[in-house]
Image (cartoon, rainbow, N blue to C red; front, side, top):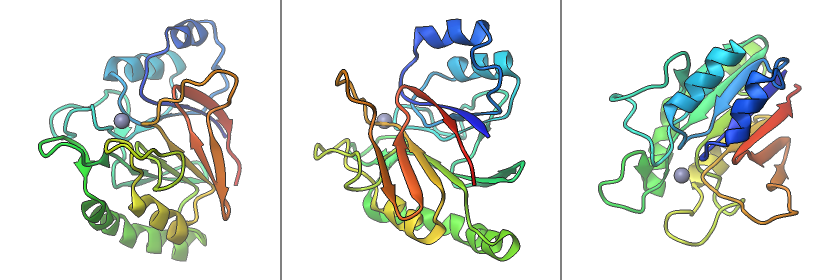
Length: 204
Ligand SMILES: [Zn+2]
C-alpha cells in the first residue's frame, strides 16, 4: 500500500505535486502531527483517500478541533484493507500547561488504553499492528537531549509488544542537507522520521 506520510511543516511543493497528480497512486494519508488542519484537509480533498492522523504538541486538544475528512487515531486502532494502523499522539511534557504533552509515566499509562485492542488483534489477525503513527520518536531513537525533544519510552515499549512493521513519527525537524531523514530498524519495525513528508510503499 502506497502511503503519503507528513509531519510538522507545510511544504508548498506538496500543493503543486498534489494538483499535478504526483500522488495519484497514494492510497492512504498519514499525518504525524503539528500540521495545520487545512493542509491535511486539502490533501484529503485532492487525493480522495482515507486520512488518519495524530495530534502533535502544537495541535489543539482533540476535543476542540479536528481535521475534516480524516480521523484522529490517537490511542485508536483502525483497519484499512489488510493493514492494522494504530496512533499515539503528543510529545514529552516540557511545559506544565502544554497540550498533547505527557510525562514518561503519563505516556505509559496512555498505552494501556491501546492494550486490549492490540491483544484482540493478535488473537484475530495473528499480529497486533502493522503501522503505528506517532508524533514523538521513541526514546533514544532519532530524538534529542533537549527537554522538548526527548523521545517517549512508551513508544519503545509499544514497538516491543505490538511489533508493527512501521513506526512513522514527526516532531524532529531534520534540516541537515544531503542526509536522508533517519530510519532505524528495531526487530521487524522500521522506524522512520517522515518530516516533512515521505512516500512509503508499505508491505506486510
Ligand atoms: Zn512536535
